[in-house]
Image (cartoon, rainbow, N blue to C red; front, side, top):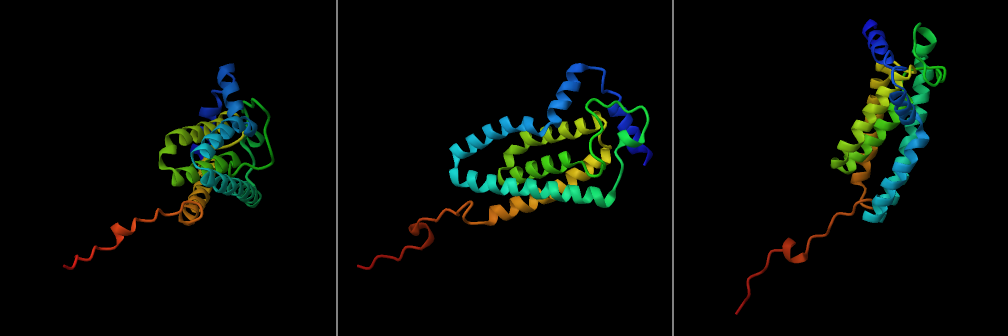
Length: 193
């Protein structure tokens, strides 16, 4: 997989050239930095539709927990060393990270959340997917993952997010179908004189 290594070097070689971009990539890679926008999104969601916000956020939390667990299990099964442990000339901005590389759990979790929201609310993709791509790019930029780690993570996360979102849209408690007025559903009988 020479192309994977070549792409890794092409992206990772950008690290260290700009302290601003280094800070942006570190910021995007820190899960704690997504709490504030996540809270603001939940507040809006709660304001717009309480039932969907409460059920949806609980479902999203379960999805992220399950995705993170699944990603960790796949990491141990594949046992691929991180590029910063295997390659020379790696620019490490924040250190190497854990033991294994495939898949990137950042990629798994962000793709799961983005897909989940896009299934529930199709117009959210223009906000969530650019963020997913930036975070995935940052994982390679910082030297912790190969491109295929990120792509694999996106695939795993998208499958889980789609399944969870699809199941939730079919659950009547989450989004009850609107009852049609009786006059629209039953044809009028002609009046008798």
